[in-house]
Image (tube, rainbow, N blue to C red; front, side):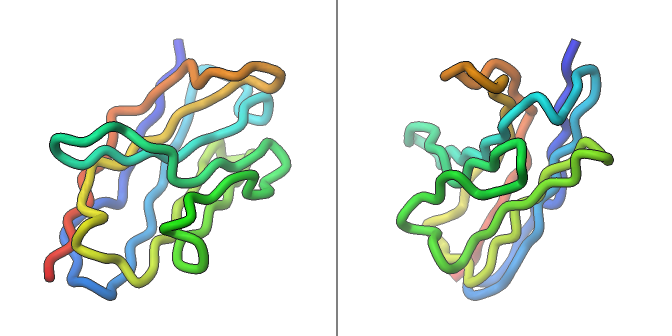
Length: 119
């Protein structure tokens, strides 16, 4: 059974930074691409950044390019989301998910961490 635990969320002022972490257990982490998603109240969940097995960022949403970066440490089964210049509209629950190499769907999800950006 896979467990994904996200952490690092909190309250930050607009323009501030946060670094989220997501740690996986129960699977060979290096066999999975990782996605960071966010869901604001009343809105759909959207993909923010996707990080390939290699550690390359394979996707960044247009709204976060130049401000958010993703990275991973396969030895520690951990992926990171560095968020800079945060905006109030980015208040959301941020969660990570795993997608097995060669598949199209994210099959394992973490519980998410709340990020609140005050104006």
